[in-house]
Length: 342
Image 1 (tube, one colour):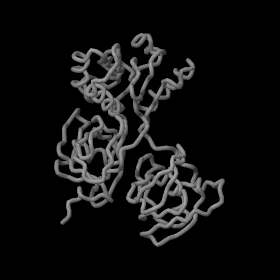
Image 2 (image 1 turned 45 degrees about the vertical axis):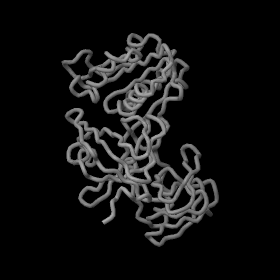
Image 3 (image 1 turned 135 degrees about the vertical axis):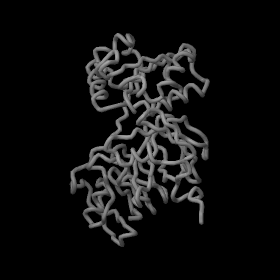
């Protein structure tokens, strides 16, 4: 039997260690096989496919380790959601030795190179994960400019439920350029309640002069975007949301005339699509059983292997595509002839 880590068409990784972080969050140490494309920059995320009761489920998780070389182990940290079928499996039932399918590292939530000398990191809950990769990368690279100052303002229910809490507190004591403010939200903790925008100036008086990276629940990000926008500083705020990109309405019209041939190889269906129509909609209109959890808020449930052709990202306009790539059919459109393994 072939080792699944040898496949270049279907990249995979073997779980080497399962490390509890809090009662509901677990770090997975994964050694990738051949063909997996590692992160270029800290802050990116990875699509993960896990088979549960014979069904392959896809989710995305932020890398919590700094970028490494091809073949180096990497870490993901998963919080088990109360109604999360996949997250609860990964956080509480996964064992070392199990094999996970992997998509390429991707995402634009990254620090520039070199990083700004004065940084504000604003996070809450499991939103700490991409920022943890950034902090570990900054601590490892040894190339920070003199006078660098990084402040992390992080919200969590209480100290025991702060993911990476011990490591962050140790960094705050030992690393001269790093400062930490913990905001605890549950009753009995101080201060109680969620962090409000009007509290930020007291925690970071020069916040207007800092570039800010924020990740966490929608309420946190929306309040931050409102505050930075009111101050005319929207370009200095960078956010990452753990949610799917909104889909176009099903059957949405395409401004371009249909014409790009699209073949669904496993279904034996061939059709044509305009260059502005998501491949998910193209397949559904042609009667293909398209995997998707997007409309239910389950990101990366629509992935499909690309057999050949090039696709365009409807969010950014970027064109890409290599045989074997796992593509998100909800946000990608055909850019010329395309074949999918569906």
